[in-house]
Image 1 (cartoon, one colour):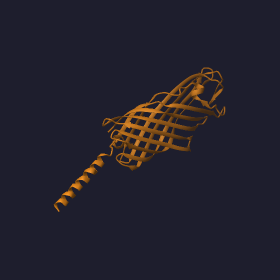
Image 2: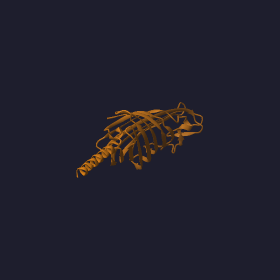
Image 3: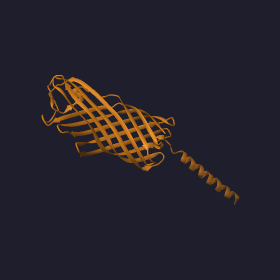
Image 4: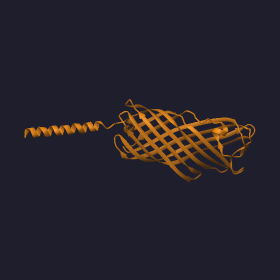
Length: 270
């Protein structure tokens, strides 16, 4: 009987140790469990931009490839900032921002009507295409463990445009506005080890409201490495595609844009 009791005690202790080891084997990565997570880095997007500015006076404007027709650079390194706050174990709020300001100076190879101004072929045109994106969203994780989460969210991409064409002979025409574009999101994060984790997010929506009509698709993929308790690094991929029509009293702008490229960043969490 004594031997049986000892064997039972050993078995119970062994099971407890195995359970403790199993618990210890679950990665505890700060990206999934810290309340505050924020960082900044450098985004290197390759872009394609087509725009058209219609006028109630002159009618339909020319569809312009800004990179090809006006000499605006296709790739540029810009800073990007982001942050996340976990309100509870399942609810989170996050924001992300980048701005891409570009200018061109090139002679046109055809007549270009931009709003109420026409630039004849051969005109030296100075162009400006400034774009910014502020993404904000609230998310809820319907599946959540210490090392995994899957969730859905609702948010906005606040797309800012400041676009102009100018020449000494023809004059200047500009369009500037801020468009709040609502999106539905799906996201996930997975801890691979105590230091390594991966994450992804997809934003998508298409709608017409007020002065705006269009659709937006945004994709984010992240590889996160956090060798220190409160500081880490990441290598990511970002893409953003926007098709937007903004209607005004006299001018209507149509914009088709694609951004895609790597993001290298440093983060802090606590």
